Length: 115
Length: 111
Image (cartoon, rainbow over all chains, first blue to last red; front, side, top):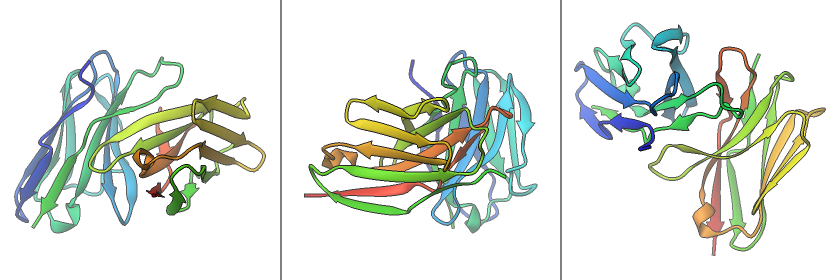
């Protein structure tokens, strides 16, 4: 398996623009997680899905952020409009909850810079 | 509430042992994990321990769990320059399938 795939790996945009981050989870996994990592706040869980349904979006910072999972193999995280304080590395992770260890498998991340 | 704490930095010499510590607050944690993040990469699972265990050894890695004190540690024997990374501990409590991650400890291995 190729692991969790994220695109793009790097994104540089200007304040006010819309940004869309993409994630393909590992085939067969039924949970998908979006995280944000910054120096100041560490690793934060933004939202997670189970069987394509959002379960907990309490970590989404504000209405500018939205996430969708139209099918089991694809999810997007959208920021509209983007702001400089959104600059961070965004990670997608997936897992199969019936694994004994319930471990999460992380993608390589998307480094977002908002100018 | 859930809170996982780690020291931010650790510096060791190559060949020495490294010990990275973590404290957590949720006594109902079922699994505790150690993840490694190399520069520019995502988090990668290193090892895990089930809450009914005190110790787990996996090659150069030893995990110790003190449930009474809610303390988790990761010992890396014979630390190498390739071990330089950020190490995160995380707890899984079973509620909602969420992991709570610590702040991460940056390990620097010097020659």
